[in-house]
Length: 95
Figure 1: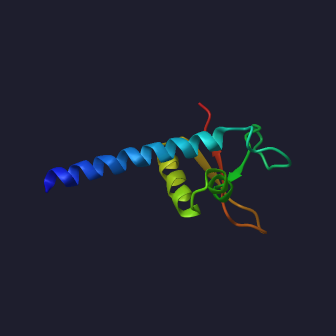
Figure 2 (figure 1 turned 90 degrees about the vertical axis):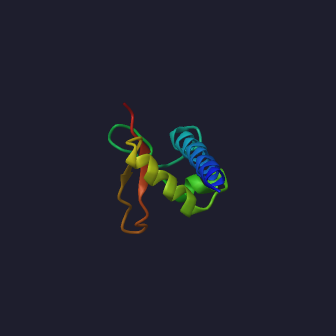
Figure 3 (figure 1 turned 180 degrees about the vertical axis):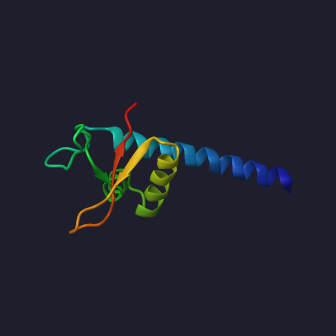
């Protein structure tokens, strides 16, 4: 029973890593985010989690969890939303 539990947890960890990589790649793909978009002073485009979820055909909850994991790793940064739409914006942290 312990081996099955270990195998399942290993599988789920790899699945999360693949999902995080897909979300990160989508967020950093500037070709997807065209038109009039908000941006930072450094020229980084701001993207909402709902836009990433639509691009990847995933639920908003899954994408938001992935972005929070990426934030904990220091790969993305979260910005506050606007008065008309308080949902946060996200950018890739360039190093």
